[in-house]
Image: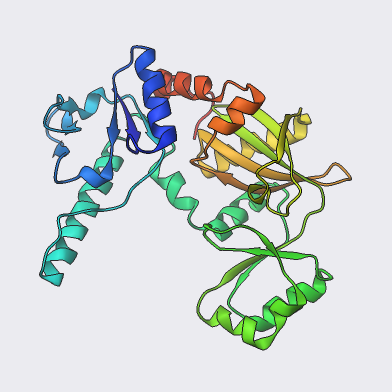
Length: 312
């Protein structure tokens, strides 16, 4: 059995589940919105099976020992039944969260694409960048802060070539302008820190890494953040061996079996690594480039842990 964390209304989750079933593989969703009202989780560490998972009342309960792989596409959050008493509501949320967390961690003998630990690490991008730097990977000059003075000094040190974006994500990259350094604008840092980085000249490269294989393409956009340009072109490219090595180092450092790695290539052919996304969207990229991304992902899920090219 292969589990897909997501649901039928999440395009990439349903796409991969359908591909698995076309291969004759048993697969089902783990939709956190249905737990505990519809889906069933049971733990029994004293038995060989360890417990079971049941997607809904109409499906068979699958022993945990039969689960070969898990594809973490999207976690919809914790959704216990509503309660009028705030304390009971809090306790229910806590219990559901603990049960789901235990369920995920009890599946430690199967292949995770990607693991809860790798997904969790992506929430802390400052730390992720530190690990990349420590592994010898070139990253941008970066400042995460809520200090207005630190922002001004960073801006001046980089001669105004600075961009900013959320620490965790969820909004597009913007250029830091002189108007952003005015006191009324900087005081917003008191409510939330921001991630500032050197603006790297050049073009974006998105590299899909799957179990050691690389699928790179240059994204030619007319906007600072390529996501703001719906007409951005995607052109397959080749990578120098040193950059291929850095991609694999990044994946191993961050515990990733599958990743969308974002890189900026400068006019001097320097490759600067921005991040490694542990749950990237890929269907549009695959359609444009013809790269066998979904095929490779499905093959990896079917092979399970025994098919890993390197330890994560």
